[in-house]
Length: 316
Image (cartoon, helix red, strand yellow):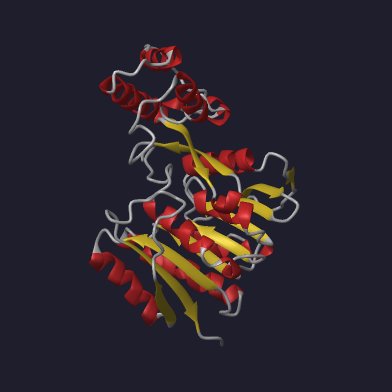
């Protein structure tokens, strides 16, 4: 039986509010007002259909959110940022991320967590040994869901998250600080590393990594990756030469002993196939993984054609 398939008592309604819109995490880091309004409207409508007496606080919160001038305590409300909270599997805690609800914000699509990032997290949760204790570099980190999940739950030796858009890097740094409040800052001479923290088990970095200039990034001074991860970075064929150059550069750092785990939403089959063919021509090996069903990260596996690949190269 679902939660709203029966009449809720006042105490149950109060408990529901305490666990959702009045949860301390949501009050401190609010999710979008539109989502909270839609949620309360649905609950009120369901209770009304059962002729159930509704808790006073239900209407108070609903009306307060409908009032003009409601503002979220965010750094940049002009690009529609709010928070999302992801409860992690196996009681590993919560990830809180500042994200945008818009498809494109401030000229970039990197300010929200996409379906492929959630599918990548699901894949990671089912393949712990591939990531635990490793040196991990993430390309196109966006707001940081996959990288923060890895850093929080898999104790990599070093976890470097990277992107190249200024707004994305700002949100990414804020999200890393939010989720590792007790981590100690570490000095770094590399001017492209805007944040480096020591969480005790893991060194966590945020880096401005432009694929066109990766050879000038001094990346090797920070990390020699065992594993590269990325989600939803294969959507624009004009970026493929720079991305391939970046992969070649990083694989050379490890004498071709690293591996690349790539999660994609297949929006255009020809575009994805073009990239895969470039990898094959460059002597990479591609293994397509079985995509795990959505269990922990709430992504719509029926509506999204997600594909995950493990990419390696023969030792030289």
